[in-house]
Amino acid sequence: MATRTAGGNAAFHNFHNDYAHIADPNERRRLALAEIDKAPFGWYHVRAVVVAGIGFFTDAYDIFAIGLVTSMLGVVYWQTAATKRGSIPTSADTAIKVATSGGTVIGQLGFGYLADVVGRKRMYGLELIIIIFATVAQALASSSRSISIVGIIIFWRVLMGIGIGGDYPLSSIITSEFATTKWRGAMMGSVFAMQGIGQFAAAIVALIVVSGFKESLKTASSVATCSGVCQLAVDKMWRVIIGFGAVPGCIALYYRLTIPETPRYTFDVSRDVVKAGSDVKAYMAGKAEGVPDEVMRVQGMQEAPQLDTPKASWADFTRHYGQWKYGKVLLGTAGSWFFLDVAFYGLSLNNAVILKQIGYASGKNVYEVFYNTAVGNLIIVCAGAIPGYWVTVALVDTVGRKPIQLMGFSLLTIIFIVMGFAYNKIGGSGLLALYVLGQFFFNFGPNATTFIVPGECFPTRYRSTSHGISAASGKVGSILAQVLIGPLRTRGAPPGSTASPWLNHVIEIYALFMLCGLFTTLLIPETKRKTLEQLAGEVPGTPEYDPELAGHLHRKTSEQGSGPGPANVGEKAV
Image (tube, rainbow, N blue to C red; front, top):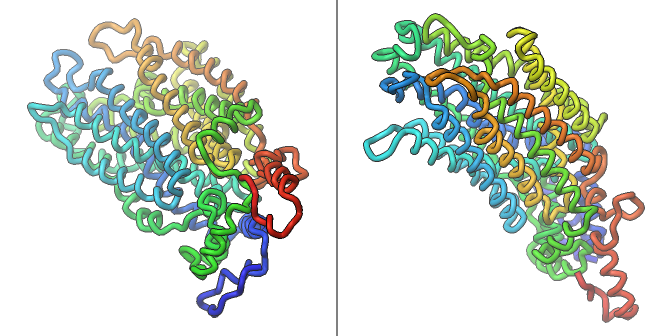
């Protein structure tokens, strides 16, 4: 039994004494985590969602605003081009969009791994600093004799992508590990739903900026003739749109830097039993972190070898995922995210192109072109994306993650088959309706669930790394879509034309990827209303229970080999 300590009052609760009577560190861990799992939904949950969600708002704003900005860059920097004056070349457009995804892959893998090694708290906030710095740098970028505007924007967007990539595993894991079991899916879904609000904000800011420069933009009948005051206005517009992305990040930065370490990480990786128990109570009380008695904390660290959960190591990592029953889950989460993002980013980053092809981004002057593009994006986001996200939040803890993902992939396959094969028959209004419906089922479907499930179904010591691997697989899919599949839409177009005669066939290819996502979804478990420890195989009497993964097999072997003598207490192979 741990010694009780003096101190504590109504303002500063003595968190240590709540668990001082528990001698077994494994029992202390179980009771502390049960408090988080069974806690009624409260303001501390809202705070965790908002702090993580603002980061995702920023991520989505920065990712999707570029789809509106690249057409503006064409007006500013390609006004003297030999062909397609005022339009950015397809290769430059693709390179700028792919740069973010390339950086994101690095960030997801790097931050995911580091969050498991040095802790969630130490890494959280660092990724936001990178995003803010790179965003401001983009807004101030300009070409020179030694470097083109494309080169310098690519550089800063790769750096920004690294920060955005880090936000995926960190926000997911921190929300997951602080969430109550009953509403964990809704909490994680709410964080991810901020991606829709970020897309909405990008379109709104673009609409406001375009309206602000209305008179200047109306002086040119087309992007090819936009010079003088029109060109100057467009140059200011894209910088304002990009730069605004740093504002919400600055607001959230303080709260991220001061968020406490998750108790699960402190228990299972840091193996600081006393501090973890203290942090649980502090979190529930709305405080930054627990302040345990340091003498008892040192004593608790000496008891840490008695914890059942295995220690993280490369050997343990390869042994764990080398087993098909665990390796298939990682394959399922990574594969599903890959197949999803091929179509999701292949379409979403090219909303302006698609709107133009179906007649919703045209106009008799530059103002109407940019205005209609912004309004078209708003229609897509408000009618499809945002409702889809929040329907997921409402149903994910009752219907379940796996049924929603299977349903989403199935309906997206059908929608893209209809769009592709009936492209020339259903008209612009029909295509827009199906496209909005597709956005709805992306988000009330695999786009949300592929983010949620990897944050739940892996053991704490590898949860962030595994989420990073899954998310990075998705971004590899988005790169594939933008570099190899997306450019096919212009196949057969006359030289100098901006037409996309092969767009229908590209959509048909996306339908195939949605079908493949159905099969990888079969590999993932259903995680609703199950504790993270049950999903990690640590709870006896549950279908997921694995004595070796829980460490119980090691303890039993150790006890049999050591004998029952009191001198052998605490001698256990982890």
